Length: 200
Length: 160
Image (cartoon, rainbow over all chains, first blue to last red; front, side):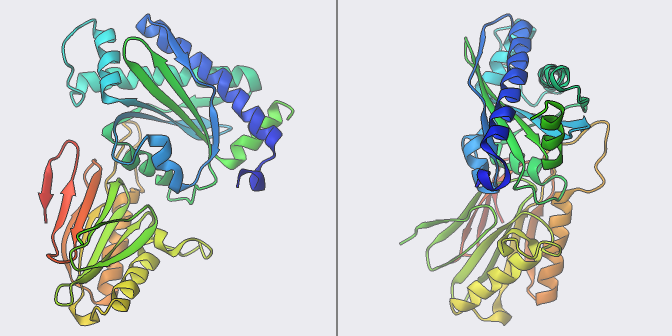
């Protein structure tokens, strides 16, 4: 279905942008936690609602989701998904504690939101440096809940039919026990703008 | 038989007898259950947006208005009697709240209102609505008993 909307070369270019941006985000996470963080090569999806479960790792899978709006010339949305155990591990690293963390506690949640904020800002800064297109992150919001419920709500938030939204989907992993996923959604117009600025 | 009939996003399914209809991970979406307790037939829709107006080519199961009608047609096709139909709904949460931007257009609330409006229009009594909040729901509906089980991660489980 992707070919109906976008040429392969544009998708490749978008994947490369995602690769660079995600690299910056992964390195910000690595600095924050003082751990090595690896990342996968991003997948680029022209998403339909039916694929949400696949991206989420299951509709009901409990995840910590940190969500930011991306404003500016190429608007979009950015989401970090962490399985609960990984969120625990991130928090233990931040608070330098071995204790079990309450993921619903306000202080823990604001720490996780701040992590999301730092990662998304790094991602966007890389894109801005690359393209000259200005993009800013909103304040973060968080949900600790079923992945399908969260991602579905994100996609539908504007009430738009957004089954043509373009996703970058990157896996992040580190030891001990961190795995997460960075998802960046760009609306159609934004993609053209971003690629246009890069001369693609 | 007692099989589980899985209802996907933007989907409508019907069932009879012991079958259980289920849909996982409802966020701002709504699960609509409509059933005839005498004939023991029913169905479930998983709608995502309030109205098909402006989306003429879209999947009708995606919208509260067209989805509810599609569901009713399905239940009638299984031998349900219109005057005996009743409804239960769940979902319509607002999963994320932004501190700097109290949201004006809450899609979950708009979905719930649209479903209620459509049921009223069709003259189908709404027995119970577990809607709103800020959490996801997975629902199982028994056509046989009319019981709707709502499961959440942080807000327990209940049968309504």
